Image (cartoon, rainbow, N blue to C red):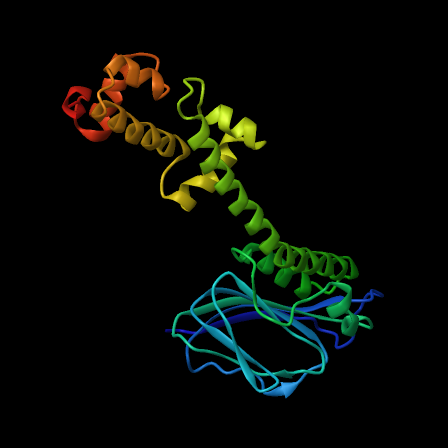
Length: 266
């Protein structure tokens, strides 16, 4: 694997703008097991955001594992040692310095353990690199703004992930409660959940492995098979499964199950 360790470091050792914390550097690494970071104590704060592979760094003699979609921090005064474990390790990182950098751990409630944060916004890290390379004061202000935006995304990732997981579970429960109603559809479910139908599809499809409509259809098909097997008529089964008529139920069953309703009746 050809290693790529692109990064940008501010030209001046000291921040050029009068801010309590400043963006100092940023990078995007694609590295293999031969990569080892500096083994020294640093006076800046560093954030790592995993993309692929396995990256480890050391805190108090313990190696912490950074997997994809995870973030971790090294704080001022700590030993900065890190390395790749896999040959296909990729991550983004940034550093802060400034007169208040030692207060960031408490001010931002930064975790000392590695936490889940979601997909790495690599495009924002690239934007940050460009801003750091520009020596104009306006760019240095913008770089700090971008770095803080990345920090907020990192810290908010777990909360957002929990919120999305909760929405998926609410969708499943709501679909199970409402699928027998012929008015139950994706628009109605999205409205009850308080989200756009496009957002509903974006959340449900990867979480459940099927679209919201397919999940609803599968619920109806399972219920229809049970009703038909119990002796219900096709018309009654259609009504109890949320379909407008027996013909439409038969059409969906042929498409989804490859059989007609009569084949499931006793």
